[in-house]
Length: 405
Image (cartoon, rainbow, N blue to C red):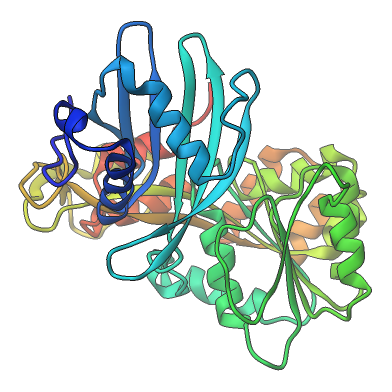
């Protein structure tokens, strides 16, 4: 169903307004709605524009097909891309000047499709990024574990989760806490999404050969205290990062795995020696983003303790056979009962017992059992805690923590 955005110009009026104005208004509206990206999508018989708000794509307009090339050209000109090149993907960046005088970075990606170029504009709004660890959704005990790990002088802290789960924001919230005049912090990313004064930030550039590994080696010659690697993608990068963590540096990075214990297995499968994993990785946190219930219209509902247990809740509530949770309704202040997002986290310090299991090269299941014995909540259990707190809905948590088939 199309989202009606009153302040965005409808394409019926586009013939009377330049494409320049239309695109500018769309981008400003995306910022006002806290959209993370805009999608301009050509199909055989229609053209649509969608925004991703709180993780959900919403259609906002269907421009006439006759305007698809003009829209693509305008966005490509703004991001300094080759408007004549329509057969190959292109990537670019541009600045958006808001009426308030604030300037935003936007990342642009083009892709040739069957019926024209699809463009995605990603909004990189550092002011909207929550860079305070306490505002991301960590439970108090998990937040304390994370702070203890990042305040050590050396070791490796890894954040894992799928694309779009907020890993970069979590890393920068950690760096924001650590960023003082007394420390030398360097980051390498592909690309840098949040600019932070006081930190030396480098973008990966494949054509000239500036890879994660090359940048890391250069960092180590510049007397760093803290290193942040946007993603560990290969064995070479992993080995350099681990070497840095073992020689007096704190290293923060990300991986793509389903949960915290899977990260230790993933490093081993990449070819990292088990003794290096055990000696280097001090903490792993897995995360997902879930939509927050609108406090204005959320509706209480009763859920039995057995239903919660079937969903994965294994902490008994004394004397309560039924519990009150909340479900989305929808009002003029939200979208389908949700407004904003929060994180759910599994924070796992790598204990001595966990290190021993890593050295024994046990599988994921054995590591997960040890994490449970040490009181580490799973992602599902962390999400259910937020359900019981009225922050999100049960369906939202079940969808975000669904195990892969």
